[in-house]
Length: 307
Image (cartoon, rainbow, N blue to C red; front, side, top):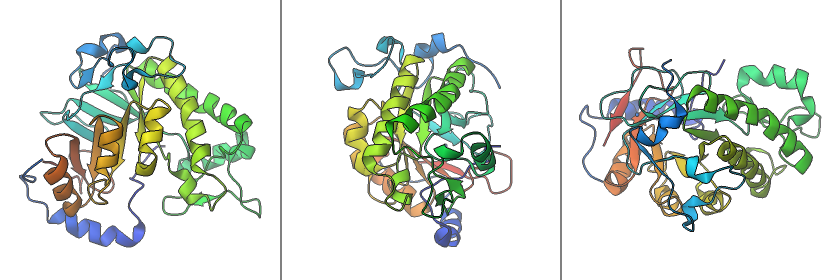
């Protein structure tokens, strides 16, 4: 059901992306990618750290039952991005992100991907049938779409709708916790950019605050996905780390690094983006190059490189 592809790239650039991927040397670049694990053992998992002591900004966890139970990813941890299909992580990987329908990788820091602000393409019918008023609508009454990825935007424009959506997405978050994940990747904090002015950054941040509270209450860290211009505000409302697509390509990594104390997981899809991220941030942030469709290892077109 959750056959995912990254959101920052646009269809017009697909051919350029593929050519760029083919140009990446096998050795990467120089300079600065269902076994169940017990969440209670997360502090001992590779790539995991306890949150800072009370009083440090990183320890803020709105809605958390016990912030000390939330385990953060280590800065510069070896990372693999597997939201397109799970496979055994390569050597050196300490943290992995997988779709919520997959299981966590044994012994690693596991991040559970949740499309929190938009509907998966094959889930639009479910939303239409069960919660039609929670889809953002245009003037003709049709769902507002992220046309590049065929995803209907969720309507986070009012407190009442945000609360109802948080209850639905919250069940997914609780499921991630039950499966043994240590963190949530909440995709599409930047959905307002595709709303035609119907949503604002404040709407998305308000919904993000509810997701942060739900994740922390479940004992999970939660990462902001994209929206570099909101990185500081995302940290202020309680996001613990960032998952940033193409921040090297678009020269945005510094915003995430500053806001989240280098707890930033970077995914690039072009050779130039990987080179830029590695040159500036390869010694500080977690950087991986993946193929556009994030295919599992062993399948045609799979690509993974690091700095």
